[in-house]
Length: 208
Image 1 (spheres, rainbow, N blue to C red):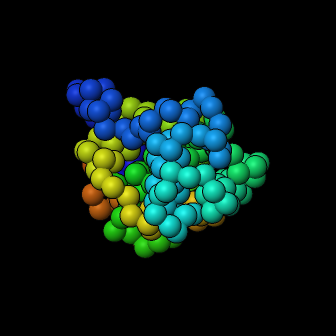
Image 2 (cartoon, rainbow, N blue to C red; image 1 turned 135 degrees about the vertical axis):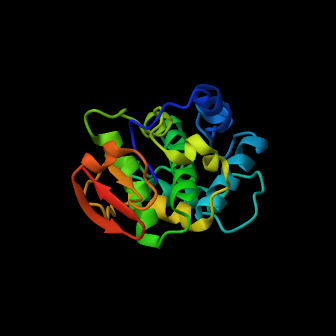
Image 3 (tube, helix red, strand yellow; image 1 turned 60 degrees about the vertical axis):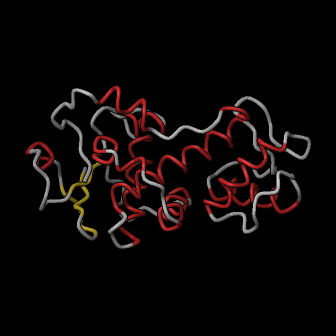
């Protein structure tokens, strides 16, 4: 369940700093390619494995399989397909990682379409006036996601959560632009019921 204007959680700021997913910044400002350090490449390869783009164990060598996996990731997330992990690709990898944590924390019991829908809401918010204009800031916005507040964000995403996130990046939006969702059975915040409901997918109602 996810909504804004939830009751303030006094320890949220401390909790958020300790639980939001962060990756090592080792390749945030440089380009990862064949000449990069083994540890940096290994970290990248593990992320590609998690996301389903690389199907071999990390080797620390930036060979053709890794380059192709990066190109496929770039293609699916709207980036230039050069096979190099520069700052833009690095940011997008972390966007996918963070969104997968949200999807798993918020919707792991939902049908697959419902998981994609949750990921789509994150992207819709990042594009919508009135919300932070980046995936990272949308997710870290105070009281925006129940999974961040209650610690479920820190759970390890499964393959379904990663696939759902990638499908949302590829343009699948089952919500047709919704920026809110909630479970009408368990929601306790009255404000969320004032939003214009559009459709129900699984246990969640999606709204504008």
